[in-house]
Image (cartoon, rainbow, N blue to C red; front, side, top):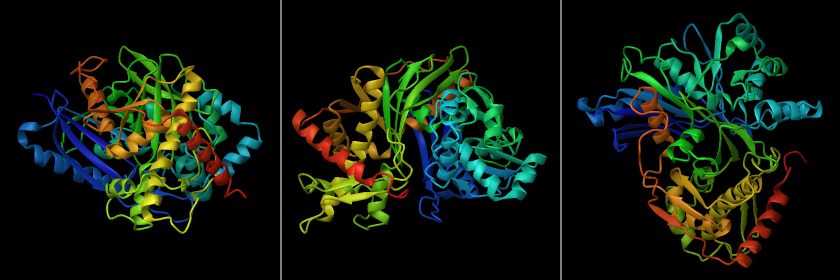
Length: 495
């Protein structure tokens, strides 16, 4: 029986899953890696620590599976917009990873906006001028470190998002690649052509020789080097985590929508082979490119702080000992008793696009308890998702029939019910919450010829559904309070 190894290099941890031909998980391993916050609004990783987590989880998953479960192909999915810069000769990083959540490049983008470049960039890339994307991060590194700029021009350095870094390391430098979906998040790719855009590289002052080759999401991308776990196995699938989850959730028809509840919350709606522009501050982005099936596109809305708000309750406020504890604490009260929490720790994403917004906890009284704060945190995550779905519905002309969910935080029944209540739409949750890793395995199976571009025949039946349980008046009142709180958090850092 063929087996597939999926590497899911997320924002806070790396997971390795081995799947059988029926897409059942044979074995799995996960390892967290450190997060660095050198200044308010700055978020960094150490690429070497990500790489160690990759090799450790690969080894652990392979060991658990046993010799009879050797993979025939590897799929890789990753946190997307985070940027890595390293030496070609040694494969060593020369700067910390600047993570997708990082806000340090807001002044650079404000200058580009003031110079009138926003409409041009939106037309070429489908992206708005926000620090979220990779180009300004790489430009910042090269501007602040002239010696790295000199080396980049000389061809001594290589750059890419996290999957590019992992492929380079797995193949011992033989492959410097990025896929269509990850490239679309850099703000350097012409979305229609699927190629690096020389004018954008010039605008951000980034040498094009730094950048990897853009490839489809399934194919032959190199073999794992000798001495590494799964040595000799071919890498056949690459995808950004949210596009991977869209494919893993079987959203293969235009109009189908999924939301991944991870560190952030990310909603994608498949729009087919035609790029669709948004009138409600969403992004046009790549979905995937497959052999014989062409390029597919999506509309996307990103919520920067989702599950990481629950981690803040655990690590910052010490209200809970583990992330799942939030459910019992929040459920111990019937509601938040008027407390509202806007989790804008690193600004607000879609549809607000306010890098100057900051977290807000409001409505406190002497009777406020930890339980009310926990409940308000789940409400705040859900409300951000509702903001995006409503914008997406306005672009589509109608609300979705259902929203499919996945990701670690989607395991919370209370959070899913809260989202369904405030959204007024059915939420469907699958048995396997790790749709991101599943999508990587599917792309790898297509790339190695195990399946055609449609993937295997499989049921998309949800494991559990959540239906709205509050009235429209209750929903409208809650939405009004949320919008009031968001307005109060807006542009705080700017002011």
